[in-house]
Image (cartoon, rainbow, N blue to C red; front, side, top):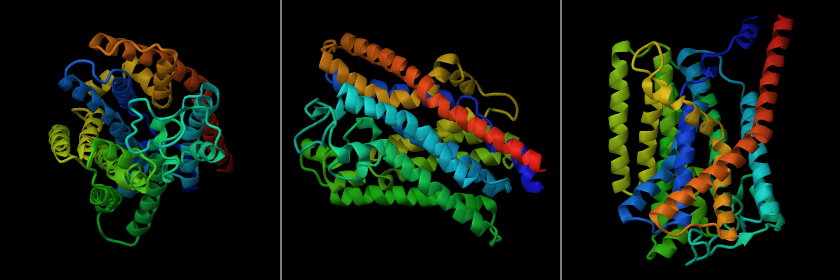
Length: 418
């Protein structure tokens, strides 16, 4: 009977958080602006402006931290408060519905209809940013299958083929598998140990940080480029070093800081953190995040440093200044522009580079000036936004609606059995 009641009420971690969708929208815009600058106007404006714009590429790090925050939240809540843990079957089904429908549709269109898929990894001395990497219609069965399954970055001969930005999906899929495995192990240990639940909830986070730092150190030990072309090839070319650089082993710690933010949020929600300490927690996390971002950049671990900052920003949005109401930053990110961009952010992430490649093919690229860069960026944002809205409405929303119907049917069935 107790189990039935669990299905009849929404768990606390199932509630939507104000402003988080807007953060997704911000991350997507950051990535789009950066790639537009790198590919269409690399020499526009002074050097400092290009460096500042390229910093927007850290939008992907924000995406990873958001995944860690949102997906670890139900498991952290179960470990800390003893609330019902999520069903693994539902978890994996939901992840598949969220990732694959839109990705497969966009990939097949890019590879077989538009003909702007990357056809092979970069060779030494060849940079995809400069536009020299082969682009066209993908007919190789191995590349089609590996890309359709989002497993292309596991193979040197397939890495960074298909949709260039989609390499991160392989990392996401690995996280989807490893994180719940660690959480389930911890849930089992928690029932057999007298240690505090906060310590147990920290174990998967620590494990992720260790995995990520180990992968980064391993890469630094084996990748010793002597030229910029060799450095690019080691990170993106058809070799096993690039497979490591694009792998979950290298990026696991980026999810970990979002998971830490999730744990702190669960402690806040369960009132384990005193109300008077909320402001200290929020501002302390933000200051630490800024310092980590600067230190990470100086030590060539910019992604790791920015992941800490991303987690701090997530906390600042998710946790208001007081116990009641919504914080100002969350209200800003809940505004229609941010919220709507957040809804289509996944499609936008997949569409924007193919749009850039189509602009190059059709000769629609404006001059390499600041004004041209602004114009190119506006074109890419508008066209990407239109295509993303279309795929969101026709491809992304139906599976999400199906998920809601199945959840409702399952709850009704449990009520009937009660």
